[in-house]
Amino acid sequence: MNSFLSFSVILSLVLLPAILLFGGVEAQTCEPSENLIGVESPPGECNTDFDADCCKPGEPYQTFTCSPTDQRAVLTINSFEEGGDGGGASACDEQFHSNDTPVVALSTGWFNDGERCQRSITIEGNGRSVVALVVDECDSTMGCDEEHAYQPPCRNNIVDASAAVWEALGVPREDWGELDITWYDA
Image (cartoon, rainbow, N blue to C red):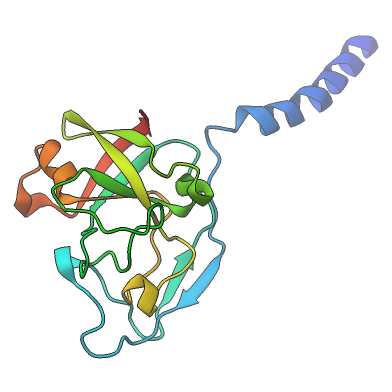
């Protein structure tokens, strides 16, 4: 009995850390990095196309350097055209893109310092799927400034998509805004 008890204790001491370390991979979360405090945009400088939010002065916004380990996401709408709510040119190619082209920006962690630039992803939602090209980062680390069109930092689980993606998924225009999706590298 004594040797069985010793064996059980040793087994627990060895297995418990392994279970916690490796068994919890699916349950990992991406914790906020810090808070960014919103500033007031100069008059007319916050682009609200597609009902985009403007930073509120003094409001804290969470920032992230990571994204969740799974690829369940929230699809949002963005204009990648010059003068659109996406701000400047796309990070991957320094160009603007037509809203008629299926392109996306990924949250900072998934964008992974540009490793997904010019790669296609498959997006599944609303009972359909579409292939889109990654052209930009939806910055989860910065916001509330001119470069980010005075909009808050991106949440860490966002696939920010052009109108063409929403149309391909068959979402009625009046329902554009946010949609739960999954995505994967094509």
